[in-house]
Image (cartoon, rainbow, N blue to C red):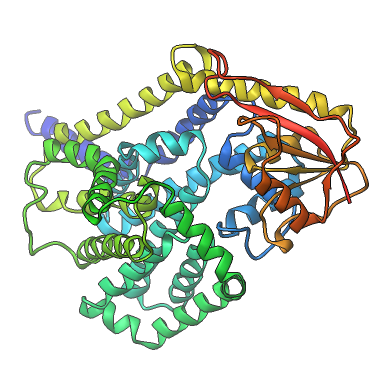
Length: 501
């Protein structure tokens, strides 16, 4: 009996050790998290958020480019709308599917780095400790989550291609790398950093310059070539639009720019690094026994970060946004989790990271409740007023029976397309091939009228340039919204007028 008890416990322990990691608990947790995210999104707003509205408005036309944004997410929304019809649920569903794809990519990346399902799940879940992922991706973003997912899958595919040497994985690497620039141009510094890092490790360097590496390059070029041709043809306007996003603040010294970059990185991954430092005290020590995959990704992130900084500085940029670095920062947890197997870490300390991730989920749900259902915060009141503004504008436009609606901004274009699904809804400033044609004779302009009743000169010029039209002098100008107030903290206001040729 004394032997049977320990033996039985050992057998049970062995069975648990063998089978528990294979249970689909991570997909279940991910599904529950996405359900929570959908609830938070419904609490925040009834109308489409900014990125949601943008992609829905642009998805009326299949084009190789849409202004300063690459086309892949728009193509995905176009396909979803074609299959399921134009609705807010379809657009939000696409965004949540992309978010799920991000965590799947992070899991795949963690799996090839650690060879352990529990560590891979921890690497994926730890992305919640990056504020952009834990909150911004919950509320709105679409381009950046897709870019992060593709970056994670790039690492996973490259490691598998080098380990196995199979042609199919070389083709997969090429396809994924080709899709990266179609997601967002912030993928390019990451891809360049990964290539440079691969050249510093013998096994990866041999693969890069082998026939398998050439196959990957060829496939990547095939995937990205049509969009690359479009970029070359529109390089002047595209460069101008991208540069404006980097320089829309007063000029700063280079030291201020560098400080802004450091601040963006600190705000991006500082929380996870702090939690990891407490949970794994020896995790930052230099360790020559780290696997080549961990060293590859570490060097790729460092080189990619320096390239991102150099690109902004070289183009005269004077500010940084945290989401520019997110495709790099979202992989930091995978790098650090891969180091955990080289130090002694107790299960309690690992549980500390999981608890921190759970706290972020609870905080995001609480934040959604506060913003969506109370008047405590200015942003919450602004979101609710946006819903009212869109509803009021749609009511006013119903009397006009518009066949075409021309909008100054994408935020309103997507929501008005929801209200008038049979109308052509266009956005000023888009390339000619990226906007739907004008339909019928009942054409209405909707512009942002916060600064007065007069239509801004740049809007009038864009209408003339893009459509050869002008405001109808015999048509009444209508307005919705009002001056800044408690319920309208940003003073949102829209103007509407008919257009004629």
